[in-house]
Every structure is written in C-alpha cells, then in structure tokens.
Length: 437
Image (cartoon, rainbow, N blue to C red; front, side, top):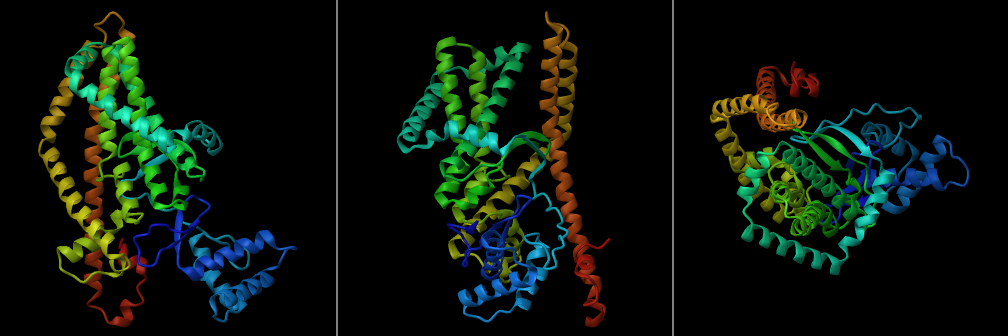
C-alpha cells in the first residue's frame, strides 16, 4: 500500500494489506523485502526456486540499501519477521499460522457482508459524482438551508406525539431511518471510489449491542489525508442528502412521519460526529492527526500526564503536534465517558423500572388497535429500542471490568516475579508474565 500519507509519526510507516484485510505497519527494510518478493513472483520470466528467489531479493536489497545482504539474511527476515505476521509463507513454502486479530476496543463485532466488493464498486460509481467540487458546494448549501428551515419553522414535538400514537407510523419511521443508515454507508463507499481506490464489501455487524451497517474502506489508507477525511465525512454528507430529499418530499406530502424521520436522521448525524466511541468523528480525529488507532495511546498518555512517568517509545515515535492533539483527546474523552457512565449507572435502577413499566404498557396496548398485527410489530420494535441501551450499558461496564481485571492480574504477576532471581524471571515466557492464568 505504500507510505501512510499525512502521518503523525516522526518516521511515516509503510503499510501492507494482509490477505485477511488487516493493515500491517512495517519498517522500511521489511517492507522492501516483502515488495521485492511480490514483484519477483509476478515478473520473473521463468519460475524461480526458493534459493534463486532469496538470492535475487538479496541482490536487490544490497543494491537499493547500500548494505550487503546474502540469501541467508533474506531467509531470516522471512522466517523470523514476515511469515509470523502472515505477510509471506515461510522460506520452505509452508504456511504460517496466523492468529486472527482481536476486535479493537469498542469495535464492531460479528460482521457479515451483505453486498460484495463488486456490487459495492458498482453502487458507489452511481453516486461518486456527488463529490465533484461544484456539486458538493451546492449540495451542502442546500442541506444547510433545509436544516435551518426545519428547526426554525416546524413543530417537531407535535409530529413526534402524532407518530407515537400511530403503530404503523412508528414502523415506517424505523424503516426510513434504516434506509438513511444504509445510504450513509454508500456515502463512504462513493467517497472511496471518487479517490480512485476500490471500496470493500458492505454489510452489518454488532456495535456494543446495536445492529450497525459498515463499509470496508481499508483501501482509503492509500489516499492522502484529504482523501481519507473525505471518506470519513462521506457518510454524514449522504445523510444530509437524504435529509434534503425528505424535506422536498415533506413539502409535497406534508406527513408528520417525515418530520420525525428528519429529527432521527439528524440525531444519527450528531451521534456519528462524536469523537468518543468508534463513530465517524473518531476516525476524523484519527485522520487529522495521522494516527490510525487513538485508543492505543490511552495508557501511555495517562502514565505520562497522571503518573508523571517518562514518555514511552510509542509516544516518542509521534510528532509533537499529534502528541498534543491525542493528549487533549484522551484527557477530554475519558472524563466525559466516565461521567456519562457514572450518571447512567446511578440512574440504572430507575431506567430499568421505567423501561419495564413502558414495556408492560406497550404489550398491553399492542392488540387494542384496529390492526393487531401492526400493533404487535410496533410494540416489539419499541421494546427492542428500550432494551438495547440497557444491554449496551451492561456490556460496556463488563468490558471495563474485564480490562481492569486483566491489568490487575498482570501487575500482580509482575510483582510476584520480582522476588525471584533474574535468571528465573527471564525463563518465564512473556505470554505467562502478561496473561497469567
């Protein structure tokens, strides 16, 4: 994939796209070795055996780096560095055992592709023209005008009360909101294609406990910083276009269902722009500073700012201004999350009691209307939306508890090993020191 453009690192990392979709950062020597292996396997006039391949790679490395390499050195790099990462096979041709990467903290789980890469390429091509500068300016201006009209002239509370009293209306609003969420993902894919890199598959997964759509835009790492930011903002931009279409439809039909949908889509956009969890706002901050995973720096920054310990090598590898931005992000986001979780945790009994009472009421009223089937379906949807936030809170608290337990066990194991002589400590595998059972 090449160099990570707009990087926040002092030495910009070189990126390799692994077969399972994971992006690996490599130092220059390993990257050049993997690149040469790939090029020779594709361009050699006749098939090369293993020894010939290693010799050719060693010659090219010697020529391009100014250092002397032999086939044995290339074999070492492959067997000890590249193959364990799953980037190449071992030098004898055997396949490495690649451990599937763990889900990132607060990341999307249980992904299932619904639209193939080929279909995504076609769909994104239908909308990529919307990113042309003149069209983009006109569209954003129209979206802002529609938002000003919506919140300055319309009674959204009255429309909400009307819809809540109409079971069929609730189902229609949910379907329109889901359509907006799907169109949001098309926006990411179209931005990727506009940057002339192919988007991956589109599908759905579970974020905390909420079903969520996703688009694989890993190839956006090939773009410049502005291209990645365009991809990050593409989803919200397409939400705005969806809002513009609903406003025009409302001016024609005048249905309060459309007003409620407009409100919910705006809430979705505001949520996506939050930089706390892994929403679009998080990735916007990440691409602005040129650091792919901000949560990786939470521990080092807290140790330096709170415990006053020297900065570790991960922080020293960052440029000065990205360090400042990430530090501000950590010190702002963590207290905000802690306060929100604290408030919700304190109010959890009242929230659970209210949710239970509401569910009982909804269940009792489900069959009271003229159309019991729609009434039951609407009640089930509302009950689901009542339960999911509570389940999400419980899951977040469980993840934080599990993380705290792992940290305490690690510190306890390290403290226990200090009492042994150094020669005994060094014989204990790192995996046991870091993850005692």
